Length: 396
Ligand SMILES: *Cc1c(COP(=O)(O)O)cnc(C)c1O
Image 1 (tube, protein in one colour):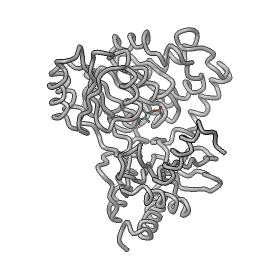
Image 2 (cartoon, protein in one colour):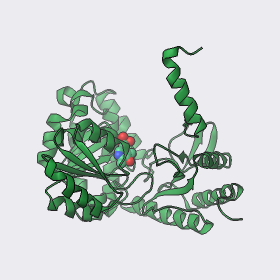
Image 3 (cartoon, protein in one colour):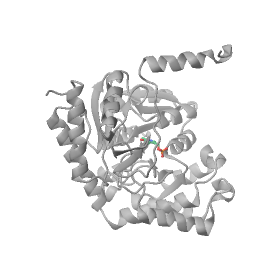
Image 4 (cartoon, rainbow, N blue to C red):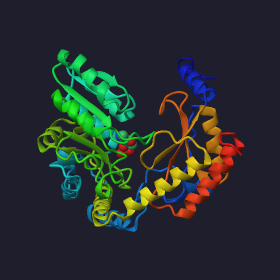
């Protein structure tokens, strides 16, 4: 018998199950390479954000082990008290140089980076202009700030301008914030146009480049590099948990702003530093990215090959312009069945439904990486074809 006060939880879980929105969490039993052991079964991995195959790279592993031997395991303090080691300082210097910005701040996660960066910049009496499909961590950062949130249509700079003209005069200051690469569709924000609009009205600008770092731009220098907008965006948010293969977030940009965020950001002030092992592994990842563009090039070759293959099979791949490849299915139940059949046939690719994507736009999200060979991709395409036919998504 459930206690009466907990009945709402039972009801809500039942609702999620009925709507095919209940998430079954799989257990991983190997590193996040091209193939993985998942729930005891070896499967082709199309699920992780390990774009460049760095999550299990020997140089990163070695760097992490060495850091443990020298520094121990835990940070033992928040950054502002006794948690800033020379490793953190070095990583921030190297990240700023890599991205071509004045300064960078390394925080615990990309999610945290948005909570850290937005509230110091805008608050009550200010207004945020936010893309309709922005990532949950941006949305939560905006809510936390207490500023008025005005949503503009997805990737629509004209609508952003209309919203700024309408609302900005009623507020003290404005912030325009957008994902760089949208994580569920793989399309790219029109950063050049958004910058022009924001600049025209004196609005602060912020881009979350979580899926662009290590992917877009020269050698993976990110979306600002891709659009050649160096020094123009006020704040660039990033993550070390995707292409960089480790964990952590970064707030990069003008020194004045990053220094200010160091004084004000609550996740930075009130939550412990990242570990020495993580920080050192991130440094090794920056080394690898600076040494060679080969991995980034391989990622894009693989992405193009896989997208073309899926399209030739007759799948709807949405509006993707990047290695994020959505296979649009619509119905959440169908997407779940599709994912389950893929898994039974040796391919690990998760279905994504509401609230991660809008209702009725469920999909399989396919993530290839530089760690996949052409044979791997061919195997993946074969299994997608088989399952797609079986479920009547594509013709025979
Ligand atoms: C993944 C993602 C994050 C979260 O990054 P973590 O380092 O995993 O916390 C933040 N913003 C965007 C746009 C993302 O895609």
